Image 1 (tube, rainbow, N blue to C red):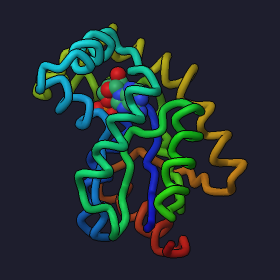
Image 2: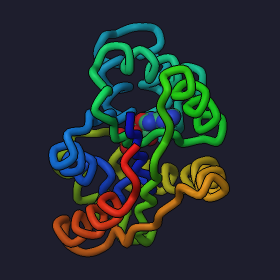
Image 3: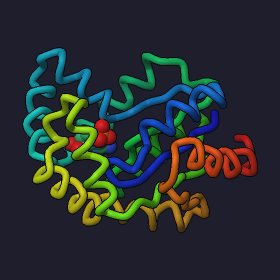
Image 4: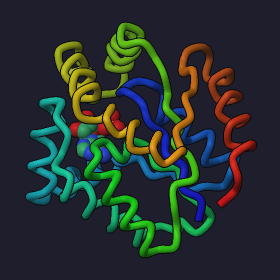
Length: 192
Ligand code: AMP
């Protein structure tokens, strides 16, 4: 099972590129933001906790995130491969993913790190907020999410760098230009 990770700050185009990658390479697309939003929509206690944290721009707890991801993996067909969008966001999650995949005879084949300057991200997300309906797409919360990304999520890069799986992608330019860069990398990386 081929597992591709797409990594980067909020607004770096992970969701848009993941959809295109999933279509071209016939992967399942798992966005942990979507997984959490679906949990919130059920009105569960976990969903209520997650809602408060998301609206405040914070990450949800690692154990809850891993539980939700595991449930998702059991519900969808990932045998042809999966693109994981927005996960892992902490080193603990990266370790959890490694253990979870080991049990399923899978491993991460590459991590795509989308590089976009912070100010461009703020501009993109403020614009997205005009139509996304997401309460976390407002400027104060956006800046908080970027800060948390640098503090808690960026260390995950080192984890995958050590594993020799890290690949930086210039995340600026048009959607098609960025997708072309990603396809070159995915086509070159060995199929697992
Ligand atoms: P996203 O849709 O990827 O921008 O995620 C929206 C929000 O969901 C994030 O700001 C976090 O609050 C939460 N979230 C998504 N993925 C994770 C994760 N892997 N770990 C913790 N929280 C997450």
